[in-house]
Amino acid sequence: MKLEIIRKIIGGILLVSLISLIFFQPIQQYLAIPKTITVFEGQDYSFQKAAPVSAVLGSHHSNITLNQESHTVSMKASENGKSEMLLEFAGIPIKKVDVHVLKDFRVIPGGQSIGVKLNTVGVLVVGHHLINTISGKKSPGEIAGIKIGDIITEINGNKIEKMTDVAPFVQAAGQEGKPLDMVISRESGKITTKLTPLKDKGENIYKLGLYIRDSAAGIGTMTFVHPQSKKYGALGHVISDMDTKQPIVVEDGQIVRSTVTSIEKGSNGDPGEKLARFSSDREIVGNIQKNSPFGIFGEMAKELKNGVMDKPLPIALSHQVKEGPAKILTVVNDDRVEEFDIEIVSTIPQKFPATKGMVIKVTDPKLLKKTGGIVQGMSGSPIIQDGKLIGAVTHVFVNDPTSGYGVHIEWMLNEAGINIYEMPKNKAS
Image (cartoon, rainbow, N blue to C red; front, side):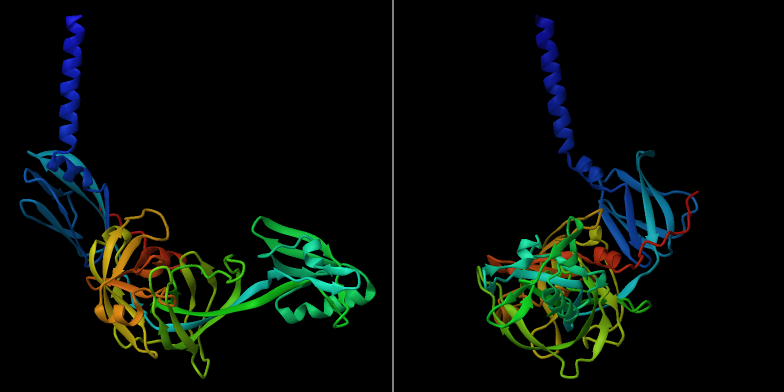
């Protein structure tokens, strides 16, 4: 019995000791050091360490240099490649850290207000319409099982690209009394159905009983342009249809210059909005190839300068972003890009592409006075910290328009089809 009590006491002491050790600062610092560090050529990286621990490079590693002080290690990356760093305690290796140095990579930050026009794949069903027939009010589309958010891609074996493609089939089928063979694209997959148009007794024409749309337009903000490939990213979030709330499936689209005419200031519970118009010449400055959760992407056809930062900037990976001051570039008047102060409230070092990687807060008195914080149309505004492009504004908090979400630039570049992770040369011994 006494032996059992002694065992429990010893077990309790060991448990308390282990818990205390975990919360011991040197151990916390050790655990916080990642197993892999990724930086770009010419960039610095530093981390905290306990005083007795020293960092040394493996043999033949000339692409990084270390500078050590009692509690910090600073690393300077000079050339792309793979290296390794050892953390030692009293000359005994206790942790190996792989260091990947990527080639220097830069993009031109945006901030310009852009007009966006999306052409959908097929025609989008945005509502049902009751037709006043001689036998009562009916919707042939609803009877055929067509839902809001469906996309009509084919009628009678013919590809449908725009609204004007639909009408001739509807009238012909109505007059012949034959149903239309419809191919519908839906989230769950492709379906087929038959739809018989009905005559509106008031207008004497045949109708589908559906509200449809073949394009959408709006405004947003340019985030970046890659000078070598001319690829760009903007908005930082998906464009959804205003009626169906579903992401718009893009066939193609265009971006044009736009001018901000006024601002509807945001308040608690009521997000504000930039009111803008497309440029008078409607000159197309780029195409739209993709509409995704990370924004819209395509290639530029014309140069689009912001007049504030027109030279390429380095970027920061998600794990390099830190809490603290930053700036955004955006337009609040005419077409003039301006720089405003914000604060990175929190950031998540994401390992895989994901939205909402940062929480940001507008701190600039001038912007707060003009807009109340983040407003619709500001999505895509580039976020810059320590001279690096780190992400884009994406969403506003409805109950606090001074704050919102941002997406890491790493994932927007990935979505644009730009490879920033070019495999480095192996310099490991």
